[in-house]
Image 1 (spheres, helix red, strand yellow):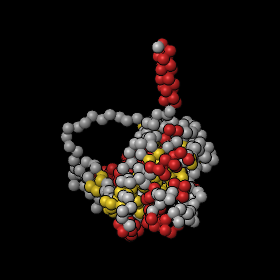
Image 2 (cartoon, helix red, strand yellow; image 1 turned 60 degrees about the vertical axis):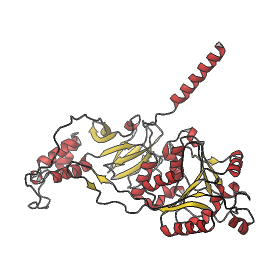
Image 3 (cartoon, rainbow, N blue to C red; image 1 turned 90 degrees about the vertical axis):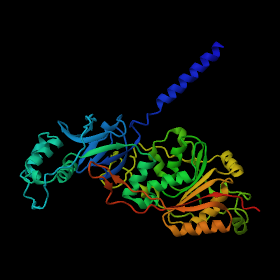
Image 4 (cartoon, helix red, strand yellow; image 1 turned 180 degrees about the vertical axis):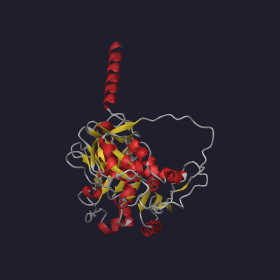
Length: 452
């Protein structure tokens, strides 16, 4: 009895030690991927933290070492010290709530009499540079610019705030430390290079996961030709339970480079596998049409051309530098994370051949959804849901028609997701003036048996 208690205590201690080794996902640790948001979305940069990582803002390089150990959501600003400029964390300050409602009162001021002739600022560029060399902070430079502006007091309140924000972005840039997960990665790519993720907006990605009923302990089959965004989103929702199997045509799997940005643990990475369509297919699971055309075996076709991993995202330099480009840049080559997605084991493949997958998600940009659907849909179990994304409506309409004619699925519907962001500020809340009006389309349904 005592021996069993000692053994249980030792097992619990080992489990606690293993848990202690796993980094806290709420904090940025060395070697993890982070998303750096500069000046409220002006630049979005992916980087991998290390003691030697460098981040460039303007013409100055800043070390990312102060970010190690900071909680995600922390805000950093550029400060100047004896050793030069560096990133310093801004600690939140609690402000007392005011019972009165904030109302903009400009006393009848407007900008009609203001003339933009670049003569309103009495502070010269040489004087600003001298203040920087003396170690003046960004806020001090902004206050000096306001004090030496002859037109600042004549502007109404909203214009004054815009003036301060413009100068803050130039003389006191701020960096927000964000955690890379499905939403932030999708938003970052959609804002800068939406073509690389097939124009999948964050609401369309959420709809894919919902329509495919991705839940814990599910075995999800994905056709991911958008760099690994869908694979990472499914693995994130599974949380180390079930499997996400990325299938493909030809000899080489599709690139899933974006999965490295999610900072998955080894437990989650083990659940990400890949296997070609011809290995997952069997005569009894192939659709009747495929059996008639190919003799009951799904033959691999010519490999679908796609952008390579290097085209999807740009790597930082070998000096661990997050480059100064208006692009989404991934991790440094020095601290490169292991590539998840090992080949599926024979036992798992045989199990999926016998029982089928619990759901399917397809995101294949510039490809015919019907050509892929008629090969991968028979891999699902009966009554399993599926969701197919495409940036255009007509290919999905054709696929939906063929599925209806072949009596392969029920509850078919095409959904166009719609998302509108709002600016919520005192006395000026309204929809964003510039936003995306296009987020692609999603075809969803439930697979049924085609036998009479």
